[in-house]
Amino acid sequence: MAKPKLALIPAAQGSKFYSVLPSSGVGDFNFSHSGSATRINSQGLIETVGNGVSRLNYPMIDGVVKGCPHHILEPQRTNFITYSEDFSQSAWSKLNTTISPNTTISPDGSLNADSLFETTTNLYHDCLQNYQVSSGVTYILSCFVKPNGRDNCYLYTNDGGGKAIKFNVSNGTIIGAVVGTDDGSKITYFGNGWYRVEMQLTATSTASKQFSVSISDNNSETISAYVGDPTKGIIIWGAMLEQGSYATSYIPTTTAAVTRSAETANGSGDASTFNDSEGVLMAEISALAETSRISLNDGTTSNNVRFVYNAGANRIDSIVFNGSNQFSRQYILPTQGSFNKISLKYKPNDFAFWVNGFKVSSLIGSGTTFTEGTLSELDFDAGSNGLLPFFGNTKQIQYFDTALIDSELETLTSWVSFSDMAQGQLYTIE
Image (cartoon, rainbow, N blue to C red; front, top):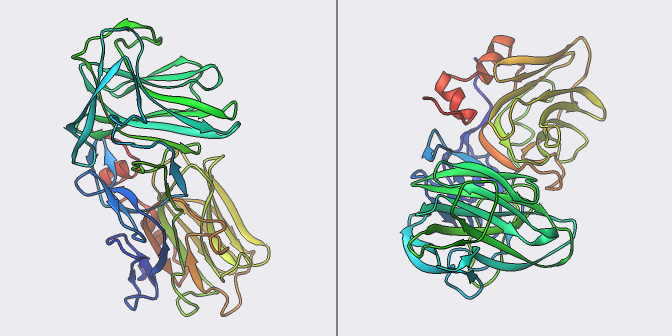
């Protein structure tokens, strides 16, 4: 198979996404981000990276790092919870509970997780904070929790008559909505007994509301008052309340809310890198739950070869556009959030879209490409200077300046082994 003209394989963090080809560095993507952010490092620990530094995030399956790292690009988010790791602060109201600070190693590897214990009061047992929400806005409340005498906990808000989702943090299951309805909940294992539990809510009014992490003494789909046991409870760390329909990487806070700015990576290659007449754009990516784009373009949206992830339909679109669509095909993904290997071949009268080793669509005998000197850069964007970005995870990007044949495209987009496929789809092999 032909050698790619440009290849991005995540291997280093820094002020760029460094491409291994071409060796001149012209293929590097300019990375932009202000402020700090967190990632999962090679030991499976949550680690903070500094201002303007890209993130290599390691995939975890069942709490264990599996496979090679990927670049992560996320939208701007704010953690509105203060003292996200210190529940002993007065910002957290302890209702029929007590806090013992810094008792346990947290998901960042430090001795900074707190034990939340019940009191003997015959009531509910909560640790809560107030925040002013805006009517009609969707939020995600999350926290890292592990059992400590109690296997069950729930996240709660008193917005709109109340909402509570109960979790079993011993076996990693969602018990269900015990107050209100479940509009979106999730539990993810981070290893060493730690689970991140998440609850989605849409505010029904603009007002100050309570957000709590609470202990439960049973695994039924109800919550009720009970006489607590001061030796029992849960361990908590890393609480987060963010605006959006899905949780993003953890943002630590102390005295005030903290914002992680949106990340961009653009400007790879130049006019001499790309063939306007024919070529192949390949990506191994998983997008976050919002519409995202990767494109080979002329610096605008007027001419491009692009992939578009349509979040609402969980669909990948492949498009060749030079003033009008010369090729436009869609593919519904089997699962949301999994990695997929996709490629788009463009050549006059010969276009093809491949996904995970299969040609899912093609067009023969029709369609034009671009005039010489048109295509000039490869972006995690639609060529709109950051207005239509890509948010998600990237394991590789390759560009070929010739139109590969079907056998080459099959090889390019196929998994190299069963275990490679399983890890890409976040499956566990038992």
